[in-house]
Picture 1 (spheres, rainbow, N blue to C red):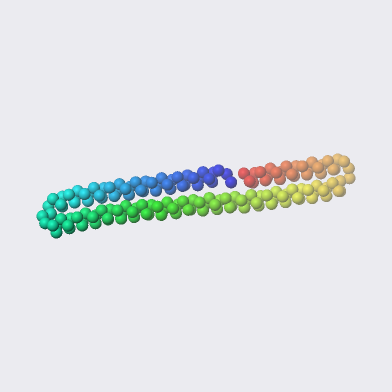
Picture 2 (tube, rainbow, N blue to C red):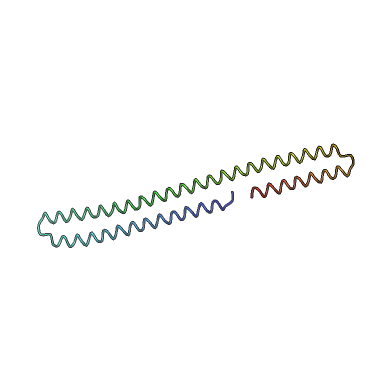
Length: 160
């Protein structure tokens, strides 16, 4: 397996992580802004509240606003985390699938290489048996050598 597949997997994971970090940052900013707005409203409402009941209502509304801001923040980060996890898992799955296909291809190539060598050896043996002179035997050896070289070349090309 070339490092190209690993590089692509690493880049995908880095990009997914970057997007997750950005989502977390945006969620935190949204929370801070919501809290800031709630603080402003709380302070103003507290100033105008005249009795104990009104002050309690202001306090309750403020706490509820903060809870809602936290829920929004948590929902954003939860969704971002789910997307990140899915992307990460898919990246691993794609990488493992590529490795499996690469291994299968190499196995088929090795089988084809072995078969080509076997056939070259068989043809060479038969040619030498029927060769009547030294020249014919040398031609059979030369053809055998060329067939083996071609098989090696084809094998190396295929596994690249």
